[in-house]
Amino acid sequence: MTKTILITGANRGLGLELTREFAGYGWQVLACCRNPQSTDELNELASRAGGNIRRFALEVTDADQIQRLAETLRDEKIDILLNNAGVSGPQQQDFGPIDSETWLKTFHVNTIAPMQMASAFVEQVARSRRKIIATMGSLLGSLTDNSSGGMYAYRSSKAAVHMVTKNLSIDLHSRGITAVALHPGWVRTRMGGAEAPTTARESATDLFQVLTTLTLKDTGKLWAHNGQILPW
Ligand SMILES: NC(=O)c1ccc[n+]([C@@H]2O[C@H](COP(=O)([O-])OP(=O)(O)OC[C@H]3O[C@@H](n4cnc5c(N)ncnc54)[C@H](OP(=O)(O)O)[C@@H]3O)[C@@H](O)[C@H]2O)c1
Image (cartoon, rainbow, N blue to C red; front, side):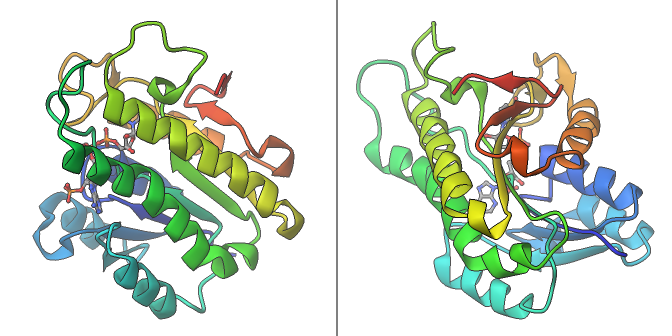
């Protein structure tokens, strides 16, 4: 039976590598990104994947577009809904003056959109076999782990999406849906930068293992790519 994952921000970085990883194992990938026409790497990957990768336009801050996509995909069974799209926030986010508009945009992408996606696609997830809603959080959003301060916008948006995840795990438990947040490691992408020790390929390989072994008893937790449970 075909297994299906929907991934947001699938055109580059971790989203692209996760698309490659899941398609490589024969999953159907509903690969969502802002501009499917102009994402050469994803298009090339899709053309080699023999129909496993279907591309859809999705700007995650556009609630109407989310609803339209959910309607287009109304008959799908989505085993894993993966909220991967994310932004790092304003250039300057140390203590001091901070651009509030960019901070709010960061919240929109990193915190609010995952909840809107969960709400729009809950029926497709509920009728699948695995029933997983996973969202890219971050250890930088952990209150317990924070010993260095700074990154006000990014940290607060990820701490908040951890709370969204915890809420989803409670509200959707009776429907058998597992809701988790993920920490992919410090990964060499446009967001993670060139100094990051882990490649997107390595992180995606690890995350595949985590995502494909989760069950309902694992719900409501922050999972690292290496299978560790991290403190909120
Ligand atoms: N890299 C790390 O070390 C690290 C660590 C912890 C957590 N994470 C999290 O992992 C996720 C992926 O990060 P990454 O390192 O792969 O980042 P990345 O290389 O910067 O990629 C971000 C992806 O999100 C998409 N995106 C941004 N805003 C969007 C919007 N409004 N609508 C739709 N798509 C949007 C981007 O699409 P465009 O190309 O259209 O901009 C891109 O595909 C993020 O949630 C990030 O916070 C990363």
